[in-house]
Every structure is written in structure tokens, then in C-alpha cells.
Length: 614
Figure (spheres, rainbow, N blue to C red):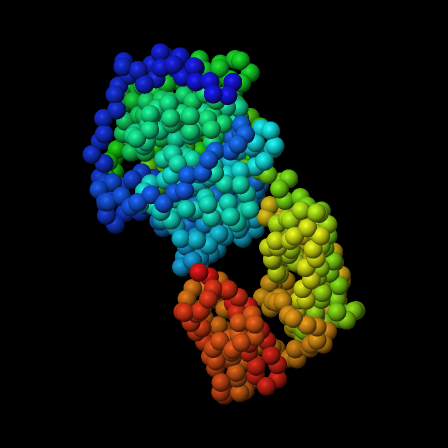
């Protein structure tokens, strides 16, 4: 079947890209200069000089590959915090809240916007559970279009990311897939094809559907060359190319079609007086004659659409721009059309009875050219890549560890050993379990690149705040992958806290942990109400505010050190009265990485970790 393109011409005969269908004529798309970056190229972007191409095209995989369909199990979903307007923040957070229940949410965020992103999540009641931030430069929020796709080698079973070229002026977004491939240590291929992910539907068996934007994006390539690239890189044995609809600036297929599984495609049903009505009806009829991998034609489910809308240009509020993610379907709905929205949810539920169908109001973003599908993209499940023969061990330096009511700290030795002959990439992280059974962490997390047969040993210093409840705690070291959670091995020891200093509660504040070079005293008591040291934002760039409370007037010294123990800045050195205080640490000109703020008031010394991001 590989390399077969014969079925394409059968589709052409059915009216797709045929002379009888309404030809597409470019519309005069306008966009406000101060508007958010939309899903399509703005007139200003199109008019700007094209920068020289920097994408490094790679040879395709050396073996036939199978593209992972978006309805298959996913490890996570990727969103970007960029150009998310205030009205759109609610729906963005709604998507994250639903997805973090069933997978990892990877959020790419510009280093200068991380604090704002955290505030948005907090203000909308979104916890940081199952969220991983990837700090990098960004342009826009349209991850579906610039995100990577995933394939499995049919011979070796190797997993790889496939990338394509994005809009020329959005170079930061175009680079994100290669950054992610490096972070995840996965094979990476650059197709050299300009193609957006919103214009790509795969059944996971070699059948791909897209619009003719595939061709208009690549005018120096022949149609056959475009289809060959999809075959060689994405495993598209057969590519079905449909004429784009009018009044949609992106021209992508995901505004009017949705592949629900490998036998069913949902197709929009336009209003009878809509300019695209006849064209989409022809598309639906054509899809209904395309054979599935099982030999029977695709089943076509229809979903009525709202009428075309008007902003600076015309656009659609589509119900088909949905996300299928690990048993959930997140469907765009619109308050302007409550009856059609409810009808769409009912149609989805009937077509996907085993899924939880959830409507999310997408009125605030639809005018930008997309909805839920356009600002999300799945990260395919590849659990086997996280499984290694590695063992972990953690022991206290001076057992047993007993922490007094006022709080204190202890030291422990950690070891991770690679028992395999080959090199591995793994993670080590520490969590703590309260006497109640609640879990806190990660208190520390480290990516590890380990040669075959090697062992890594580190000593940790862990603080315990006075407000921590009395009882027995577990201090646990894991190796594997924290997100997604794959545990190859774990080890733990217990420690006790004999009481609480005043009101006790389970609060992450004060549970700082840092790596040290050599063991010292096992337990250090922090008498009285110690000066709690906090920094916000943290991570930061270039400034963070360090706040602390003094229980009594004292001569205070607040200094910042790097990980080598070198003094970086002397923020405070003098007498201060009791009460709250703050100081600004400016990291401008410093290398990104970990620093430590150290506060001494003559009675005690407390330390807080600071993370300066690029």
C-alpha cells in the first residue's frame, strides 16, 4: 500500500478540486495592527520581506512509518501562553483544567511571561498538577499549526517527531518542535514542507486528508512532490486533497471536518444559503466513498454550523474545531448560538458514546481563525521510552531523623544507578508524604544523562518548617519520568516531627531542598518563629522580590550566592526592625540557572532557592 496515490484521483472525480466546485478566490483579509496574532498570516506578515529560510531539512526516516492519529492515546497536550487575550484566558484555562485530569499539559511560555501565566492559572482556579512549563521564545498560541507530529517506525518501532515549516515571520514558534525534541531526547525529522497541522487529518493507517492549502503553501513543489513528502515523513500512503472553503482565512480542513476515529469523519453542514454549502456537500459525499483500512467506506456524521460571521473579515464559529484527548472531547460552543451548540454536543455524544463530551465557550477566540483544536496539539504516548533498568537509593546521613516543633533540616545521600549497558536519559525527583498521606513535591527534580553502568550520587539538604504537622513522614526518591509518571524504581526513609510551632498546616512554603557537596550536622533546629524567606516571581527574569518577616529587630544580612558558593550580591547588611521586609534581586547580566538567597539575623540562617531563567 505504501506509495499508492491512485485513490486520490477517484476523489477528484467525485467533485473534490473539480471544475464544477466553486473555485476559491482570495479575499481581502484585514486585521487590526494592535490585534492578537491570529491563526492565519496577517496582511502585514504577508507584505513583510521574507527572512531567509533557516529550517534544516533532514532526510526522511529510513523505514516506513505510521503517523499517530490524534484520537489515539496521548501522553499529553501542548498549549502555548502567547497572545492569549484577556477574554480568551478563561477558555484557555478551561482546556488546561480538563486535560490535566487525564494527561500532562505542556505549556510553552516566554521567559518574561511565566509569572503572568502562573497568575492567570491561579486566578482561574487551575492547579499546577500535571503541568510542565517549557521556557522558550514564542510568537503565538496556535500550537496545532506549528507543533510536531509523531510517527512509529514500522520495522524498528522507533518513535520520532516530524516537523514542518510554519509561517515565515513566526520563527520562534517554528523552532519550538526542535526544542521539544531535544528536551524529550527523541528522534527528529524536518520535512522541509510548509504545512500547518490544522490542515492535516490522519487515520493512523496511512490515509491522510487535507485541503489544497498544501499546494498553495508550496508553490515551488509539484502536487506529486507534496504528497510524496507526506508519504516519506508522515507515512501517508494515500493523501486526499480537498478544495479549501471560502471565508476562512486559514483554509484548513479542521474548520469543516473532524476525524473521530479510523472509520468515522464528522463533516460540517453549512447553512443552505452559505457560499460554501455546495462545496462542503460535495466534500461530504466524497469522504463517504473513501475506503477505510478495513475496506468499508468512511461513515460520515454531519454537524450543522452557524452562519458565517463578520469581524475585520468573514469567519466561521466551527463546532468541528474540537480536541479528542484520552477519553474526553472538548467541543467549541458559542453563547450566540445556544440551540446549535447543544445540538452539536448531542451529535458528538451520539457519535462517540464512550467519551466524555464537554463544551467550552469559544466566542472570545473564534474571530481569530480557530478554536480549541487550533490552540492544542497532542503529544503521542511513548511510555516505553521512559522505561529503563535503573535503581534508586536514599538514606539519611544521621538516622533517625527527628525534627523539633520549631522546624529544622536534615541531610540525606541519594544514588541513582544505570544497570543497562547503554546510555539512558532519565529523571530523579524527591517527593514527601505527610502523616495524613498527602503528597508534596517534587521538592527537587533533576534530568540525568547516564552512560551504561554508571552511578550518580548527590547529597541533599532538606528544610522542614515549624508549621509542618507532627507525625511520621516519608521522604521518597524516584527515578523514571515524573511527567508522564513512569516509576522505574523508588527508595524512601521516614522521619518524624515531634510537634508543631503554633498552628500546623500542610503548606509547601518552607520545604526548600538544595544539593550540597558534603554532609554536616544532621538536624539544625530553627528556634522561634523563623524568618520565612520567599521570592516572587520565581523562576524570574531579570528581577525577583525577596520577602521575609523578622520576629524581632536584628542586624540582618541578606546575600545571594551561586551554586558554586560564590557571593553574587549583598542585598541587605544592617539593622532592621521586626516585621515584614523585602529586597529586589536583579539578575541582569547573570547566567541563567540556580542561585540561593541566604538570610542571617543573628539567631538563625534560612535559605531559599532562586531560579533565573533565560
